[in-house]
Length: 141
Image (cartoon, rainbow, N blue to C red):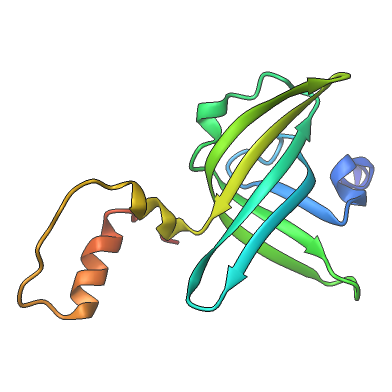
C-alpha cells in the first residue's frame, strides 16, 4: 500500500512519456522530449532529452544501459520502445535541473562498433548470423 502511494506521487506517474532505466530503476531521469525514426527493414533510433535533479550522473556508466520509453497512447494503453543507450552526454544545468542527451538504439546496433574482419566459408546464413550475434550475447535478449 505504501509503495503504491509512493509510486502515485512520483514525477514519472503523471507523465505521458516515461523513461525507465532497467538496470537502475531508482534513478529519476525524466524524459523531456524525444525524436526518432522507425521503418521496415531498418533499425530505429531515438534521440532523447532527459532532465534530472542530480547533476552528477556518471556519463560512462549510462552507456550500454538497457532502457525503455513508455508512451501513453490516446486510449490510455502503453506503447514501449526498448533498447540500449549508445550515446549519453551532459547538456548542462539550468536552475537546479541537469540536462542530458542520449541516443536509444536496438541491441544489434552495438555490432557496428566491432573492428575485426572474418571470413565465413561453408556456413549457412543462419550459422553466420548465430556466430556474429553471439559476440553481443549480453545484449541480445
